[in-house]
Image (cartoon, rainbow over the protein chains, first blue to last red):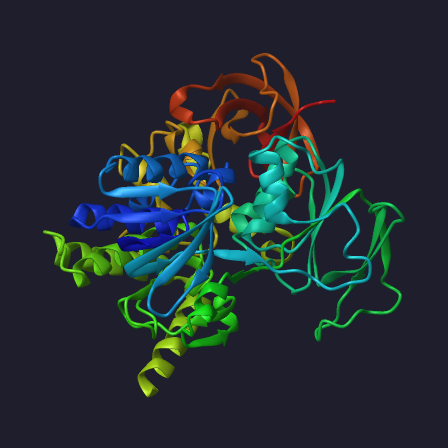
Length: 364
Length: 159
């Protein structure tokens, strides 16, 4: 059994930021990352980020990943990193079991930050398992990390920011994006992203959904249909589009399975993306010394995940007796940054969801 | 309609343009029509000409008296929603962000495209800035016929 003060599960924006603030406070940590390298989903985000300077706005995601990784590598004595390592078990006494190079490792930790992020939702329609039908995030990984084109002719399902951004990056990679379809009557993501696509000649069809996919060995075409106000197909509006790839971008859900494993109290909150843990204002779950940060406690932009990571790292270090010399100032700053990021119309769902969680938490 | 197809209305576009008299000098046109948490245009402007303020969800407002049309905001905007417009010798001159490859070459004639993605005119490539500072978002200066000053938005390579 290996003993640690703090284990951070997930080396994406939230986990890395948490490790940085913990180290700054004097608390050492172990970051466990199942991928071969740190950075989480930032490693494929070739676009410039929104937000403010404090969250590295206008810097490309791939470069933010480098900044956050370099920040923790500045503390080689404080931050230990295990990549290509999967957490296979998490227990209430804060024993964590890891799988690395076919080796099974047990770690006992005083505190744990779960920063596992989120995964892509799927969409049910006939033949949705044909080769050529991808999650939009998977396509982004293929293109921007591995340099592999997903196909030649693509339709994107979903006009949230991921759908719009990946469509743009597909065009940058030379792929023909035939259209973006969106079930809702209005575009989901930032209109600046939508306008960017439209001026490149890509139509965004609102009130449309994919009805079925066709193909024998692989995807050959899809049938789309107009939807009425109740999101039911309108008869006679079907249209067949020949494509070799279809990208599904219909939202993310928190990767909370490890939280279930240790019996953290959770609730399904649709505005936060799915099953999320009850947390207090310190990001602590119902299991003492088990904390969460980033998309696992509510799906948002990476900028929020970064700040949540900083905040949680700061708090956990303090609770284990390593109080940062500028604790009060930093605490106020991180809270204010989060409030600012969430205060506009696009933060409404997050605000509602977090209020729901806080209200129920108080009742209990 | 912007919410349904991504195309800003004529009124929205005109609300961001100063008068043609002001445009004898280059000015930033910020086509950011909704409140999103973002402020690099304001913080990158060396002349404090773009105002957003404490709440980063506030839409940017350009002070055309202070704006010099330098173009720093054009490649700093993560939404690629800013162009610089100017009227020079009865032509509309733009500096626009461009992130596709190949990049245009000075002297080439490319298609001029409107906000719906339709080709509306020809565009002469006058200058292409691609330095470390623009961070992979090329700053492309083009001129198009003046009548398209409120319709033109980007260039497309002629295949």
